[in-house]
Image (tube, rainbow, N blue to C red):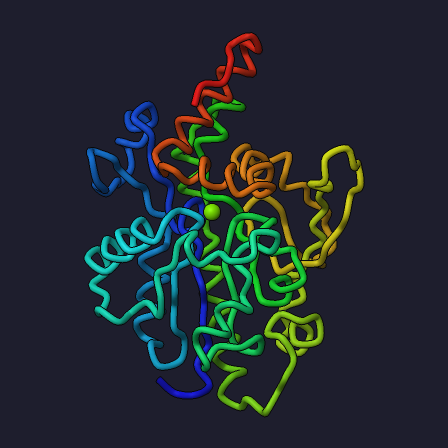
Length: 301
Ligand SMILES: [Mg+2]
């Protein structure tokens, strides 16, 4: 591995793939699903094959890793599945981490922790790709992350009764990500001894990536506080034109699971509960949807 490698850390769920619940499988039978374990199936985000082909072709220039809020066993099993699916080498991923490596729960997936574990990684060359605002917007990560629209097209089925298959097929986030990675690799050829974070505004301007810098608006997670904050973040999404980079987004209104997980970031117990089983996540969303229709239907564990 050469010194000026770029490191890209991928979240799993709703970033790389969507783990299907039993209820969702019939819909998704129209698309290619992959067997996971215990009869579970996953659907990979569109263009993921192109993404991994690109990463393979540039393996000395850009190195991927995986970091999930699920456990490390889940991270490893998904890495194995991806290796098999895309014919990746054994050492393809720099690391496959789970919640065991989330030390600072107030700043989830804190990239400073990556830098302490891997001496070649630092704020000038390493970034996280994650669908959760809460993993990205804190000070440790916001200049070293790309917020990616959640790959959760089943949401459209629950909310609008529109086809999740069509929503999934229209997803081109990974094509955009490849373009950004190409830009980073090209700029890295002539890398000077920079100390500025990879997605600091200064560097984003320098790399001509301003069209991906968006104002992300979100509400405070502190109970009783109605504060709304706006943070400038790198964002990749399908739903709106990002030219100009000044659109206001409200991810909390467009993503059911995100709301849920935000709440769960507030205590360790909740985090454990959320990630006890990845299978429960999609089931829980279905239960949430049912509860909305019938508020007296109490939440069951
Ligand atoms: Mg995720």
